[in-house]
Image (cartoon, rainbow, N blue to C red; front, side, top):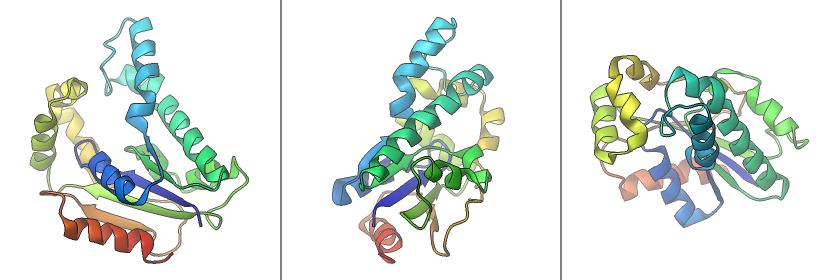
Length: 196
């Protein structure tokens, strides 16, 4: 059965690194929302006279954020419609809070959660200091706003409940602190492949 595998969580949790490790071993379309949106976001922000590397301001959230999710999910749904696996990476903050969001997305291709093996890996770190250290270490210009507005940004680091209607055992809270070890990858494999 085709897989729709979500890696969700706050900036700095290591979603992309974990998803890359999965795809290297198991394949699937690698659909990172940040990568897919970047060219459009840079163009939109530049046309508006804003910083093209901004990914966190209220202006960005109002004009670019939802476009990124639409682009990413359109690509994922196309993969599923072809009978292929899709690995989707992004924060998905609003989306995971809406119980009907996933059902609406799958309905766009005439599918339901019964037609795909949907798994959600909710990646997190133990505390705010862990996130800050990770974000500082990756040294990306896209993180300037986060670090410069840390007190405002840190509220986005809380763990979220996945509200989608999924079978039991479809959501894994994944503590991604420390190095990515073979034991962690084995835990991920047991979660994703255990019921298939």
